[in-house]
Image 1 (cartoon, rainbow, N blue to C red):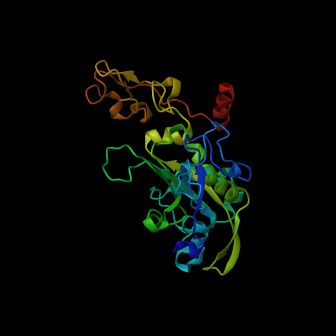
Image 2 (image 1 turned 60 degrees about the vertical axis):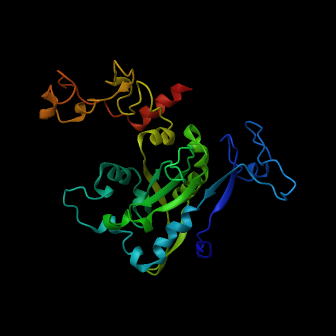
Image 3 (image 1 turned 90 degrees about the vertical axis):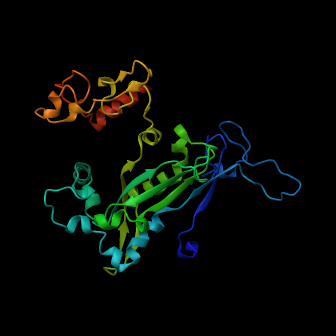
Length: 303
């Protein structure tokens, strides 16, 4: 039904070992994985007349779905809400936050067109068979726009499904392989944009989009970012300055009471010895926040 509205999806074959997508002009013609050599298709039976792939990724192109915002006058008029409202010093929307303002300072050309869309990405795995114990897991990937006011931007009708990552197992560290079509969509929307008609203003404009952040639980955070969320250095903020400790009986790593260092230096919680870690006060300042250049320098040294 939605295909007739220009909102269809494409099927992309995947190596069953999550090595690669059969995607792009060269790879989509292959019949075997160029990484592990596994066959793309299941063995044929006497009754089968067509090739049946082992795995299929479903990709819902992002640009046509974002353009739909401007095809409705009612929705299009709210797409610049984030710039028109009066700030009252209370954070009620991401546009009040530090990350939004930092982005504006660094990319003023994006800010020149107020209708450009700022996005958040969310994903998590679930079992499609309810509370089944068979461990089957699929991963939908959603994108939500933050141009809209708070009473609209998190409504179901404004959340877009962009990918359905097939099971039966979690993609784990190979999640980025499945994200490639969405990343290509985002790169095009950032670098080039798409010509879009604004029904509210009665004009065409070049719509661009930017992914501001991702939303996930901690294990999915590790899959999206590539950061290891296990072990002593699991915290991406503290890193080597972590205050984690090992529980003596369960022998598991614990990060309890690592948060007090982020409180103001005169906060009463810092002095409490009985409400947090026993007989412990907190006098340390939080770890320094690394700049983008410092993070990039660390990544280069890994190689």
